[in-house]
Amino acid sequence: MSLGRKWPSVRCGRILGILMAMAVVCASLSSQARGAEGEVARVAPVGPVFLQSWDGAPYLLVNELLNEGRLPHLRELRKQSLWSEGVVPAFPSKTAPGHARIWTGAPEKVNGITSNSVLYLDRKHRSIIEARRGFYGDALRAEPIWFTAARQGRRVLVWNAPQAWPEPEWMAESGGDGSWRQRLEVVYGYTRDWFGSGVLDVTQVGSDGLELKLGAWKGRFFPGELGRIEVRGSGRRWSRGLSTGMGSGSHLSSAILLPEDSPLFFRLYSLSSDRQVLYHTSAAPVEGTVGLFPGIVAAGGGFIENGPSELYESGGFGATLMEGGEGRAEEIYIDAIRDLVRLNLRSMEVLLAEGGRDLLVNYLPFPDEALHVWYGYLDPDLSAYDPVLAAKVRPVVEEVLEILDWHLGEILEKLPPDSPFFLVSDHGMDGCDRVFLVNRLLSQRGFLVLDSAGKVDLSRTRALYGPGNTASIVLNTTDWKGGIVAAEELPELLDQLSETLSQAVDPRDGKRLVRRVYRVSEGDNEFGGPTAGQLYIDAAPGVNLGSSKMPGPFVERRAPGGHHHFRAFDDPRMLGILYARLPGRKGGQPGALSQLAIAPTICRLLGIEPAPTMTRPPL
Image (tube, rainbow, N blue to C red):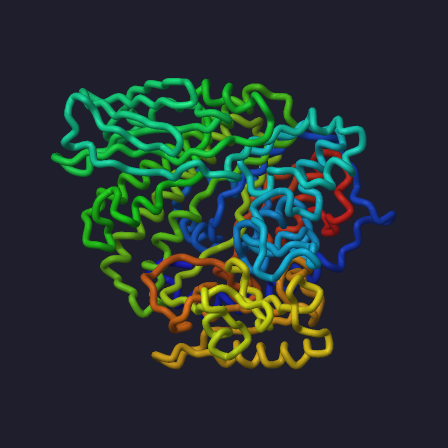
């Protein structure tokens, strides 16, 4: 794929070839036996095995940059690795289900992570409007690779990865004598937010400083040659010096560790010659292995949950390129990304230097976050495409990938040259400039009914999109709390919904909003299951899905953006990446492989038995 240059040719001849190759490879994988006795062959343990995730790295974009001679460290890794023309993600192709597939080697209908939000299993006491976070580990219904390895005697560390925490209840019950807890280390910071990132104009601050409100804590910024920050609360007081500007000599302040090991960082940025702002990161308690995180922070590591994309888009760093800015806002946002990646790298350096671990799982929230912001401006198929703006945006997109490539090179340098290494992503990305608000259509057609307060009236509602942006319709059947749809009514209701969704068009231009509607009950689907709906929507290219129930048009035009939820078998832009440095295996494979093969491969490398739900053969 080329962003703004070669896309048309990709969407013609190459898509058919990719799809045909994908079908061949997937059929081959499903038909392979697991050995004469039905078991994966055991090999001597090797290590450490390093599993790195780049959230949202699209195969087509990454491969294009590689073919252009960019990303030198990934280009070198590719020479040493087994790789394919992408990997097939979950459906919907979202972060939580994609990573669950990678970790568990089980499809979404088995592992329980059917989207970023999942329905509860206890239907008697839960309704269709209730959901839990698919990013949390206690929603898993299949073993993640770190538990499989730890319960079989391997030492494992998992750094801020989706579903790493909290552990499911069943894990303690199936973990034998519990000694696996001594071998599994988890650091996770995504469960509770105390306050989000922020930016304050400190241009005119006097010598007495500026008061800051930081959740339950108070801070004060004092100007000076560079500046100083004080934070107080919980009976403690912290003070940190600040740096300003950008480049290798400037970076975030050293971390302030709030209670529950919550890291907080600050930095000064000059938006112009006469305007300066103070940026602070978000703060959230760190969960997992007690006592591990402070030592990492003291050595210069740590993590930030995400980059400041919301601050960037809201003008906190000045006018964006899309608003006519000259690029300073993008420089600051990318520099903030670089700081986040630098913290991750330092953490990995400390952990690798300690040694003794057999498997390390590391997660970075990029390029996904940045591509959500910029990707749509590079899509020539969108009606708002501006080639002049695309030419300005493309270099900043490339720079994000170059930062990740730098991180990759540094990690590989710290590992033994023959150490197994996996670089993966959970999904690809597509440009969208309109959103199909499915619940609004369901409401207009009488499937969904709201009460006078604008809330779902379960006594009159037969179907709901969501909860959350799940790409699926859940039917309000009588097994749910408050359900009204009887089993004998299901066939007719599914027919009605399928027809309504399939025929949905944008009233402004008559373009179809849905490429295909899938019934979970039809065929041997990997998607669906008890935590998802019964009907799945694959939106048309360029169409994002939304779950708003408020009255209004069911189609809204939006600024171009990057999105992902499409079915990869029909849209190669949803394919993720896989580069696997394995003993005795290297070279490109035709077509796309399944994410489900990654966990069984790691089991073989570690010399352990795969979990019963890991049914695919190793790579």
